Length: 474
Image 1 (cartoon, helix red, strand yellow):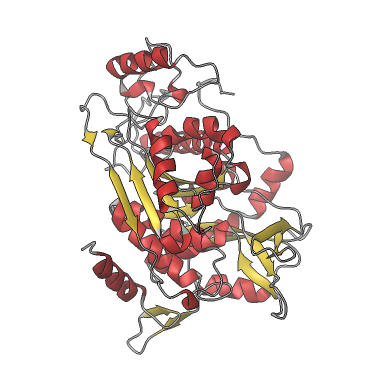
Image 2 (cartoon, rainbow, N blue to C red):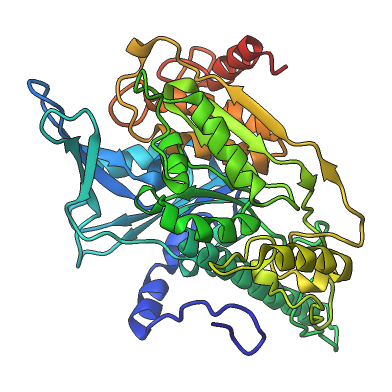
């Protein structure tokens, strides 16, 4: 669904939502002075109860959820007081929200936004084991509160350099469209306000806005880090996954989720352990179905580490958006399905012919997601296929793997937002995950004798330095 300008419609807010937003306006004041937001997550905030096999007692009121752990991953590399404020997330508090968790989050000094709703309970989840199974189970014990792009509207978090999301393929497409629509809209409003302030009499109200890094009010496209939701990593969703890939910068399933898309279990049939060969094969097959442009998969594989797979092809650039109306594409392919608009009855020969024709005819104005730059020429990417080992090689160091994958992606995302390469970003992610899995819940923030931050008694930069030396990434 689109609005009158041809942009995807963003869900409108009800009068009650508007009143609540007005009540919450003061909650944003604390981050209005933050110059930039490097990272924001649309992952949910959850308070966990973890039930272990007997005789170990359960853990209750544990900070959890993809939002919390991904924010932790970004925060680990963002020391207070300055960089910590570049980490943004939303914490929805219900009437039962523990003060201890409020104090814990406040102590991180991030741009966390607390939204208190005394009419509901905080989203809570149960984690445990069923019978003799070693497989972890999860279920919600209170109604969940999902974040949307509209929750970021009118806030500094909307302009984050990197956005992390955990969702289905179709939901991913909706969120990306909504985020970009909102960012363009706010850029237009900011440009109009600046024009009035400088006494300009003519304001261009075109559909598109310039992407000018020298203008703080200009539209820029965020980095999108997509974590597929486990329940919908199935062969039936593979088509939707390929449709979502053109809209994201990083797609990061874990080994089981990737295998689920490809219809396998991802395990070695002889040992029952994670199969590195299956991970590599599944990445090869998925990327081979998208041959004309470069896509990046980062597969999180537990004790095996992570696998970075980027197919060679045309490199996508973040091109400036030109002013003026959109031009119709000659090839007949909708830009929103470009390089990913597969249908069950697609004629593949016609599809590839149309894609090649579109690449010749396309200009920046045809690209609603700001991903392809034809006027500047085509760069060819040779691709990457590389394993990075897990930080911990001693399994006794791993106390609870809960949240390790989300923390990995928070570290990866903030690294990319700060200009690191994908391999460096994966190193940041691996180190971030190592802190998350050393205990139940989150690591302990402290200070060394020199006044520098430590987590679990160790400086993050020292752990990162040792890791990159060990794997030969320097």
